[in-house]
Length: 148
Image 1: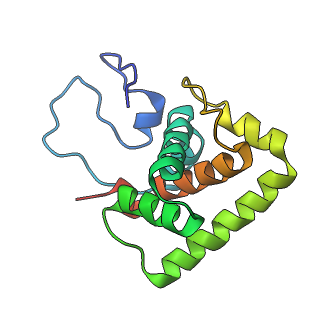
Image 2 (image 1 turned 90 degrees about the vertical axis):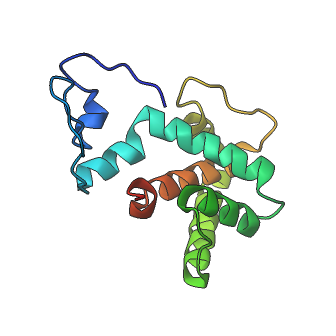
């Protein structure tokens, strides 16, 4: 992702992740995990757009059914295969979102307008919005954010 970085102050979203100012050299950054970081990951425009792009990739490259697509997205985000419990939770959460967005298509379209890149008009908006929220969930996992 690209962002503007001023000489003496990191972008506000990166400050939540303890980004150092560029006044000093830091050999190793401290690892932290705070609720504020989760709020940034779930709500910052860049991360919502990244989630939408992950959703689009899941829908186009991940297979033909939700279970395959969620498995593909999980593997992209974490570099491992989910266990059975994780798969069932992902699928249940996806179905909840899909039910909501099928009933509220305008809400789905509004979510899909966030970010600089336009959405793929060939994809069903309710389904894409549901996968976007699942992509947001996957990108917000501690396992995704703190890879070693």
